[in-house]
Length: 108
Image (cartoon, rainbow, N blue to C red; front, top):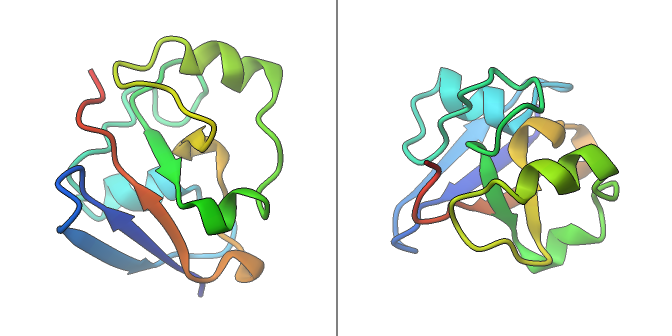
């Protein structure tokens, strides 16, 4: 199982999870009580409460944001940056083993 590390908005709190292949980074966080990801719409790409900043060394390994994700990110409560993603759109897979995402200061 690929590992995903969630870095809290404080920069010091980290949680590393073994995530089932094909499970979204958002769903794994919500199921395991990671503080800082709300996932209000349940991963249906209808909100921006699972906004994360993908660590720069990983951004090139993910698929591009599509138009719908771009539109939803406009609703994010924290500043949107180049490395911003909705974690419901990032699926854990073996070639992403070790993925690191940083959580914004707010989701709502």
